[in-house]
Image (cartoon, rainbow, N blue to C red; front, side, top):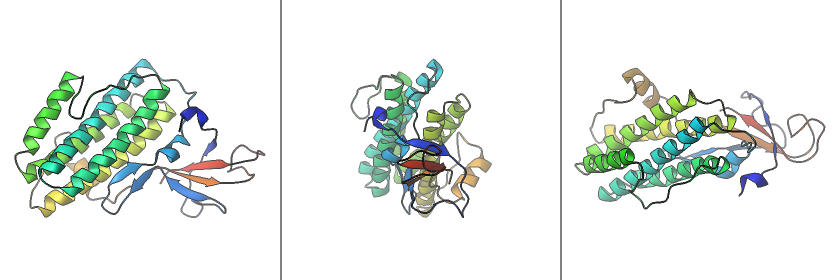
Length: 251
């Protein structure tokens, strides 16, 4: 679906437990999270919150490319290591990371940022290529090391997204990034559970021990949602207007 074709009114509102879903509305989450915390983007829901008229700075565009590389790195490493150790969980995380990469690509297309070409495991950025090689080599050593590589990647993504969020006020970018970091925290929790079940331990490298502990000991996160309904009303499109409308809720 092209972003330009999305012609929906979005009213941003804070929703309590009692008014999350109004009569005639259906709640749709940007993140589809299963019982293990594996988190994929629902791109059609995401597009409801995107305003393609918002401008982006050169720095924000450069950061989008950097984050795209991070998501591709995660997908490519998980694909290799999931196959190497027959870890179905890691292979399934790889498919979720591909949906994260696609979410970033939507923003890149809006802002005219070229999407790099290249096969799995290849990167134009030499530093990313070197990191990919290092992570795969480490993960090939043992099952424990493969799971630790998963933790390291998710931890790095969380730190990187937090850093980029301090450098932007663009509502499109913050919307997508907020959900990306929630997904990364969910995946961090999932890898931590697997490593613990396998008898392994992990020392965080990019987050403080307190921050790491707080994440892995907290519940999975659903991310942003949009309550979609039909008809007239303040919470369904523009005031006094007709047609479909959406309310965005932070959950």
